[in-house]
Amino acid sequence: MPRIPFCDEVETPAEVADLFEESRRQWGSVPNLFRLMGRAPAFVRAWLAKDKGLRLERLKSGEVEFVKLEELMIVKASAINACSH
Image (cartoon, rainbow, N blue to C red; front, side, top):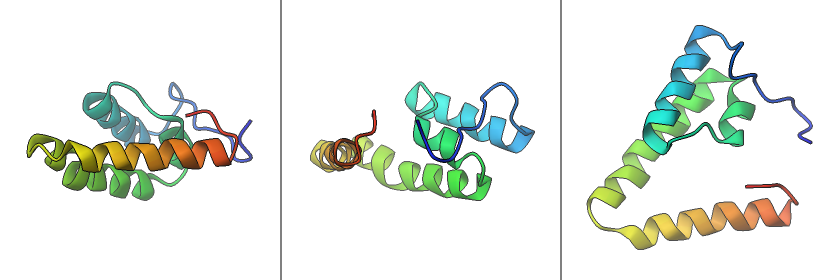
């Protein structure tokens, strides 16, 4: 259980709901990290911009190893902190 409660996807302010929808369009779901960051919409916006600028552009250019390494770091950090990914 997180120390900071997740934002409820159904009852979020419009700005956060729009960001969650953008996440669904990009990745097919709203990760728990976004539901946690939903309490700071500017942070979610920045994270999505980073994803567009790094992850998606690298996938489009064929740099799959970068994305695999980034995902591995996310999974490893989750495992170290006993979090589900």
